[in-house]
Image (cartoon, rainbow, N blue to C red; front, side, top):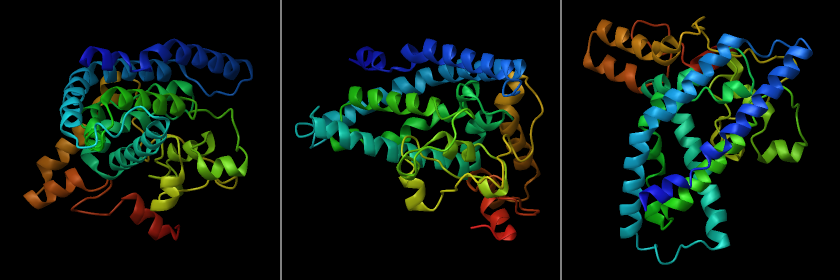
Length: 297
């Protein structure tokens, strides 16, 4: 049963399509001198894809076992099957779970250390979509642990999670402008996701949605892409390295350095659990603080 559920993950089936699309976009960028790709940056992205796949193996296996157990004890398991309405409901609940998982990766520094490599490229392209967060694989599935208790079987969950990620791949591009306002109002789009990858103060820690942008609008984390403020891709302090180990580990090493320099256990907890940018010595460089200082809502 566990093996069958893991086979329902569509990610591996989509990988050849991802790579083909990336090559086409890179060819188009080179032909039109757009400089949207850089070879060693793309190789670093692909190395993160491999590392994420390896790191995720055990956590995903444990998660599926947990999902199966929780589904078995759910009082709703005989009510929620694979009816059309169950798939629709699961789509919304999965996207809701993804929003909070993704938001936590930006607002808890320990989680950010496992996600930051996805943002470390200074280019926005389909190759960046493959620069998966590695460390986040260790805690990812905890954000979905409540769904089997509602009666959703793990095979359905893995399928919907995979489809959500498939949708997100196509958001990582500069080739698509803003879409119809109704689409922009409801769905996550390339425009919204370009904002998410921005290091501008206005754009920091914004637009965490997967398929839908409605969660960001509801919970106050939405920002529009503005013509008068082009997105600056990358980190507030870029690592300027394509070394896979540096891309993977730089924030963990920074956390370890800060923990060693901290003067109290309270400060150490704040370092781990508050948003990136907090410092006991100051100044406070968290995104919310920087926006407040700049007068940006």
